[in-house]
Amino acid sequence: MATIDFTKGHGTGNDFVIVADPDGAADLTGEQIAALTDRRFGIGGDGLLRVVRSSAIDVGAQTLDAEWFMDYRNADGSAAEMCGNGVRVFVKYLLSAGLATLAPGETLLIGTRAGTKAVTLSDNGFEVDLGVWRPDESEVLVRGRGLPVARPGLGIDVGNPHIVVALPSVDELTQLDLTVQPHLDPAPPAGANVEFVVPAEPLVQDGVGSIRMRVFERGVGETLSCGTGVAASALAVRHWAGASAPDRWTVDVPGGRLGVRVVRHDDGEHVLLSGPASLVFSGQIALA
Image (cartoon, one colour):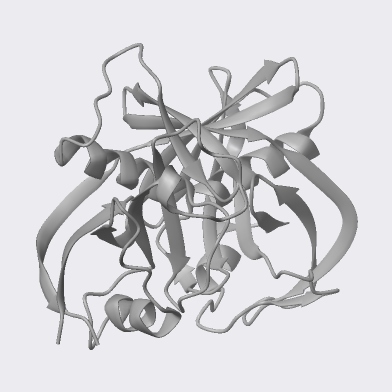
């Protein structure tokens, strides 16, 4: 039975199995990925990051401007477009393994199924430009275990789909049971990550907005953090707050705190996510 080398990493508790495959020779099956990320019989993780050169993978995305491609898979083995925490952990691995360098003021490009993402150093770790965001004004009703009534959700696209739901209190956020997948009506064709948010009181202090969030990730379940979900949640609350809302946000999730910035470019508003990334341990495991 073949063995593979791996590294375990996380970004604010959103954890990943990292497999280096520069030449694209180890195209893991969905079943193998699910086994590797299994928390009882495998290494354990919310997903898997395969480190592969953009020239060695064909995903139908134009990412050849980036040397490295983040082949991100959910814990159930399904492919996902993007992962904000995953990109930071991916970059942390590249730097640790000597596969890339990133100095202050420099930018490192990473290929994803949602296009090329630019990563820079930040005070709290790494900052990734998630690109232009888009709201979806079509109403989705969200039912979740622990919610007394269905709540309207706002669709936000930051390279992958999200539905953000505002809750009135921290108590309701805490009592929400996310061991059961929330029900979306109508259900998006490709599914969506679902975020539940509570604005801080006051919402804005010293020009920075603040919210709390929990998330149910498509193909995974509840996670301690979701980078693109953090960005989507801040964007949704900013959208609801109106024209006077700030462009800088902090978002508290069960795994820690992340930062969000909105920056205007010629092609529209870009959303940037910043936060820490950690590598925990490395080893070898038999590959079924």
